[in-house]
Image: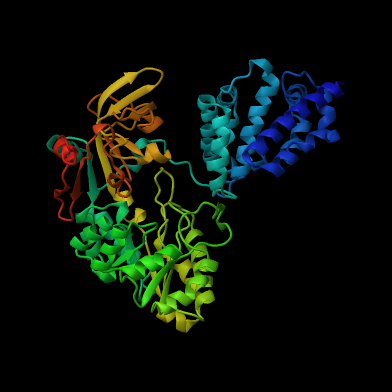
Length: 602
């Protein structure tokens, strides 16, 4: 019996995990981690089989065929994947279930600490990943959990502990859920997200005619989604969606959306002039600026719009330019962190909107300036697939409406946008019908029948309306085998900024590829002279070669509109696959003449 040695080993391990848990914000789990190891049923076994170089459970298992200490331990510690193994509901087979995020993270921290303890000075940040690859753990994990663990341990191996822990703290745990649904593992085939609105042969012929890169949009998909959205909220007679022009400021798309009954959300003079030329009128335009220039307000007053107030000082600017009318929108933020699902959005640092206290201070001035009705608006999350977001936002805005109803008539409640799209294979799109039904239930709970009959409901859904119906078509123009496999393409971050700016995932598929080919890791990169100009890193793709045509998916919102000219890169043309099946140009490519036009060479 080596009581001292075993005590020292498990205590060192516990304190390492506790330290790591504290660093990522899991305080309670750090304090409670592995306390069962000090119980006699586990501690005595550990002391008996102690070696100092490997787990004593393995030694007991080798002697008895099983480990009594492990059977005790795994049923009391949720950071072990074995805790989550149970019979499936369908075929009654033992299967791994998805681990809640916080326990999945603790599993990773536990593995890092164990490798440090047992490997000593030989430890490297690659050890935890190599252990996972060599063990049977990955085979027993649920696919969702396995992908998460592999992501964390791969980042550890490639970028080190400091970067990985920051990512866990700031990204993974801020977007956690209490328990994942037991989803089927999505296929590994990179073609499982291929757009159906244009086939492989048609696209190849289009590339031969147009060259690359270019954006391609599906008019039928956009029109169908707009109709589904309007149908979902038809229970409200005043319902309308206002499309955020910043998502895709292309005239042909905006005109098509207007024809579908959509309004427009704008924030600048240029956007106001654009939508005006596309046929949008005063009743169709929500002017929703934050910290606007005076020329923005002047053009808003000239064209006509429905203004929304983002801050107290704007009120007097609006009044000065004659922008105020009978109805004024108010952009709100809650006093406390906004929570929905497993998410928490903190208001500290939120540059948008006003608290209710700030709004109430303005009420006398609003009345003096002739405002009689208010519209209430809040935008508290972006690109979320969480079904709780809209209902929780509706509850906040309904409570705010009741708070202000004694002073002003509430003309509309604007649920804003924020609904995401399934960028990754296996994710599910937001169900408009289900979301609308939940919102309606909240309205009926908080508002009287009389008030609800008069109230208009607005949304500002943009990404979910056009995002899935845009492709960036590019071609491989260079291949390099170095520390990784690199496929250089003729598009770049200047054409699609989201992966570079946010680390965002955009699915990539190879046009006409054989799905049976073995996949390998590739970095798909552009020509901008920045190492972050990458559409994908370590993405599992079929072997790539010069000339391959790639589809970059889900770029119909916040794609072309975020383009820029850094490095002298010129933004590509945009095309629309029309309802009649013809492809037409809706925005020409930039030229070097455009690039030089604003220069003064004298």
